[in-house]
Image (cartoon, rainbow, N blue to C red; front, side, top):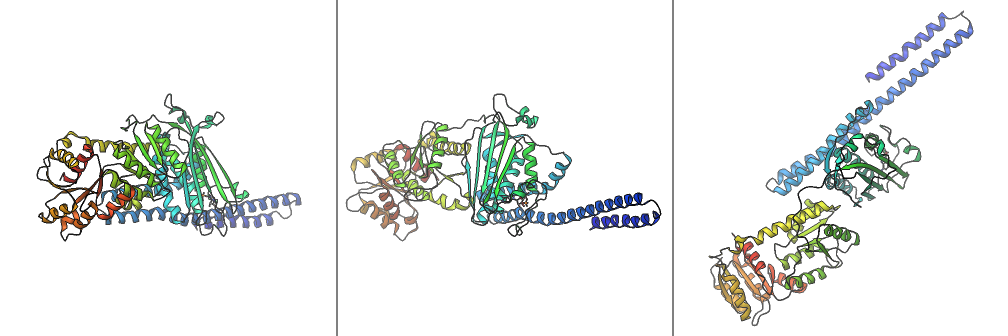
Length: 588
Ligand code: ADP
């Protein structure tokens, strides 16, 4: 308002001056007079233009302020929402941690948005500087995904984030600015694509090509190069099948405050600053950006940025090298990616496309005592869901066997279901080597510590009562021998009927654990379990019942589960596995 008043004044004064000047000049020679009139007309036109520009700038500023308030409100909503979720789950540490992580990301995004305005002024005055710090590409992609995936889900878009060849995960650069660039581009694809669209994001790296204008890159990139470690070209592509842009608009897309004004964009909030900042940042980083678009068909942004690389983490992973990892995934691409990463980590991937095959293979492996060090679940299987397979394997292989889920889903959303199915670690997609191998190393080394510690070998379970149900005399003897060294009191039943009688006659809470053979004369293990579970006493529902069979197929596992057994222990009895069960069930 103040601006336009000032400009109005400036506009009126010269006009009256023109009139005065004209009156005063009557009588002078007409050529000089005409010359003056032309000059004054030119001044008038210039002032009118300045006035129009000031009005436009004022209008742009008002529009910009209202757009900004919307853009600020979006991450604010995420923060407020996450704070209330965290408060209502204050005693659940992982949930609170997850909320805090999201609050952190949204706050950082909010901060960068508020900083847009500052950025513009820095750009205008040529004071834009870039930071230089080591960062992990995996963390960057994860952070971006946390911001953009919920937006895409809300609009029902299919957002695919793919990772191509990655030469080096540890990079050096301004990670916040990089995030700003990528979030802006993907955010626009989400915004300017009608609901239910297809958005494809791809990240990869290649050596910086000779013809690439590295000379134009900031000297800092060259200086920060670690001797021997080559810089990489980070290539980013984002394509959408959204509303697209006209040829004519593409020429102006990187101008500040430029937005397409059409029926399709009228309801889409934006500041018109994002692209201008992105272009400037990419230029400063020595990179390049290209846009292709067609109205009504979609757009594609290609960005390439040279980045210095940081040395690999000195801390080497404690991986069970040489061991097998079972990969359950029917989709070719993710299975190939998982296998390549495992091989790089010195592990042996073994792929199964059907859940039934995985269970059969594991059953044999358990029987023959060559269990893999972990199971890696992907997205799909030919015959069952990955969580269904997790349930079977958890039953078959015991509580301690590492089961990892690699998924695009938000862990907070699926955690309850996945943990109940037996999954004990989650690796987010897009898949990065550091994440997968790091999680695997953590899980397998814990397992090693948990089950292999000397304290467990010498554990004393005197005072604990175990019911051993086994019809075969030789098997009874072996099991008794293994159990007796632990100090536990073991009672033996020769068949299911005897086991039911013994349990019924025992005082409530007397038995701590039951090992139940499945195939027995008189009454089999399934029936005995059913009868025990049906007894009207609390311990009948709580007691941990371990099925013992020479071999278990999916159907056996289903039956034992249905009868009420908790887990499966295959024969011949493996002392390590037995120790693990005792440690887990009797420790407290
Ligand atoms: P805004 O805050 O308006 O989104 P940007 O500077 O990020 O501002 O983008 C400038 C304009 O470019 C947008 O207003 C929109 O008209 C157009 N635009 C950017 N990305 C896309 C896209 N993926 N599809 C269609 N139009 C786009």
